[in-house]
Image 1 (cartoon, helix red, strand yellow):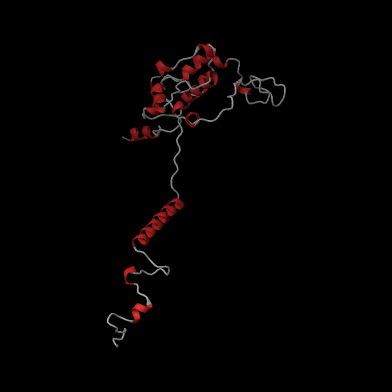
Image 2: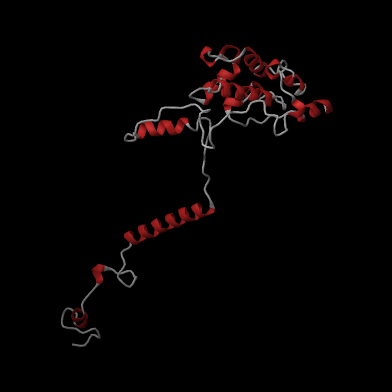
Length: 234
């Protein structure tokens, strides 16, 4: 029992993160170690080379299903022109944790053919960058992909909402009520209750209840029927 508890504490069980980058063991809730980050690295590497995540879906549930069935859904489009070494490294990341590269440390990743020619000992030196882009000015964007801009048009509510949602696929937002919100709600309920009471019990301008049927003029109160005064004298 002590060994079981110790092994259970050595793994993590919470399901957190963006679905596109989650490893299968996280979704299956079987407990995971730090090696799940190598899966996420493989997803990021695929996205950088192809242009989109490997298991993208319009719905998070679809994405999770693709991740669990990665052996059938992991596809490399031919138009991406990915080198065999890059595909090999990505597949080494996006696999079962027992066969995943990096599970025993980063040495196996550094030794992969994809990183051939990289001097890891001097990689952090200022002049050791493996690729140095040549730019003409500080505003040169020639190394970035160019996209056709959308023509100006009247925004459509449905389309703009759809585009906005796609920009935040996999994210959720919920606003919890604060103390001020609770106080305002209570004040609103109290105000409605007072208005309801005033409508059911009419009041005069001074705020006191008045029986509209019992109001008499001074002349009526001076003489009662039969010619008697209020004191009973004729």
